[in-house]
Structures are given as C-alpha cells and as structure tokens.
Picture 1 (cartoon, one colour):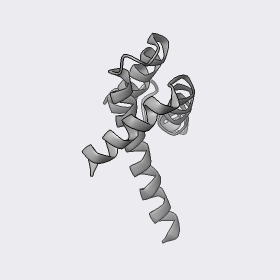
Picture 2 (cartoon, helix red, strand yellow):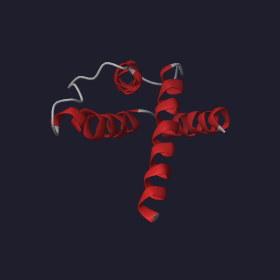
Picture 3 (cartoon, helix red, strand yellow):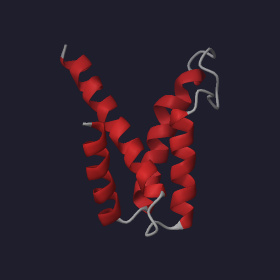
Length: 96
C-alpha cells in the first residue's frame, strides 16, 4: 500500500511541476530557449498523441516514463530558481 501512495504523491508532484512549467513559459524573465523546451515538454505531457505509441511493448511507455521527467529536469535547470519558485506556488494554489 505504501508504494501506491508514493506513486500517487509523485503523480501529483509531476502534475504541479508541469503546470508550473506552463506558467514559467509565460514569464518574461525566462530565457527563450528554456521557454521552447518547457513548451515542448508541456505539450508532450498534455498531448493525446505520443512520440512512441503506447501499444508498442516497453518502448510505448518510454516517452511517458523517461522523456517527460528528463525533459522537466533539464528545463528546470534552465529556468531561474526564483521564477520557478513563484510558478510552483501559483501552480499549487491553482491545483489546490
């Protein structure tokens, strides 16, 4: 049961991070290249179309399980920390 709770918590954090990245894309203090990567990551996360279709065994979930978290991590390194902190607060308020 602990594993399920941990996965739910991580999924909630991921949802907050993706929304925070969306908010960061709109912030003028974020460099254009970080905005471009953030937009691509948010688009990939929210898009119903996957880079690799889910019906392909193992590889189908690769983009969801690896590419999205890696894209988020890389984008977070490009965005100024103070901007990201503000965006996270706004995302948490909006998502409850």
